[in-house]
Image (cartoon, rainbow, N blue to C red; front, side):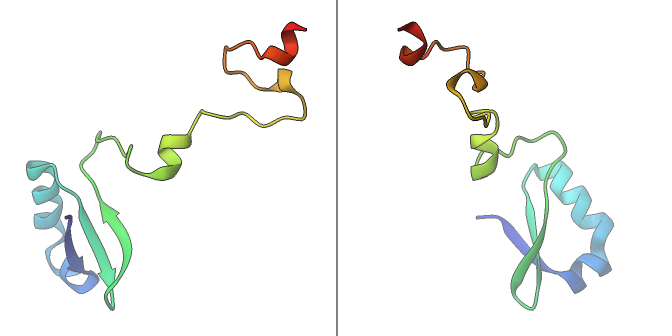
Length: 79
């Protein structure tokens, strides 16, 4: 579970919190009135748990089967 800090604490201790994130390689969720508004993450860490990151590059939109660039040959094209 990521650590959470209020935005007022971030304002008061920003440099220390950024150092903690870099050293411990763990993210911090910044909240305002208990609601998450931002995330501090270590530089270079992958965000693969993010649903959009997992889907990135899996589908290229288009009107025809040939518009999809997956490298796979669709059965409809073989006929």
